[in-house]
Amino acid sequence: MMEAFVLIVVRPGNEEKVYQEIIKDPRVKEAYRVYGEYDIVIRVEVNSIEELDSFHDVMLRKIKDIELTETLIASTYQR
Image 1 (spheres, rainbow, N blue to C red):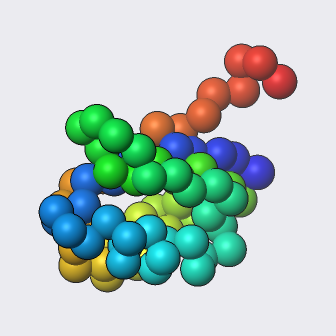
Image 2 (cartoon, rainbow, N blue to C red):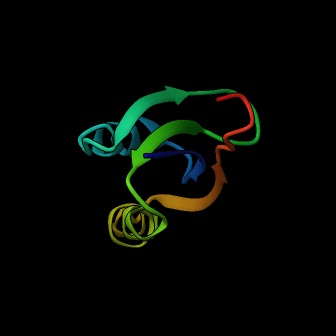
């Protein structure tokens, strides 16, 4: 199992709509609307890098109001 944090920038005025769409995916374990450069931060759990690729390319890219994402893969240093 691997975890990743995805930082998301949304087209202004569409934050709630995008948030509601994202939390439907069972791989999304936490989601927060935040202040600052990004609008939404999510924690995703996947089984492999290929599943993370699929989550990003198939799920996130279909949401037209997402303008930008940055994905941070969690390390295993503290485990």
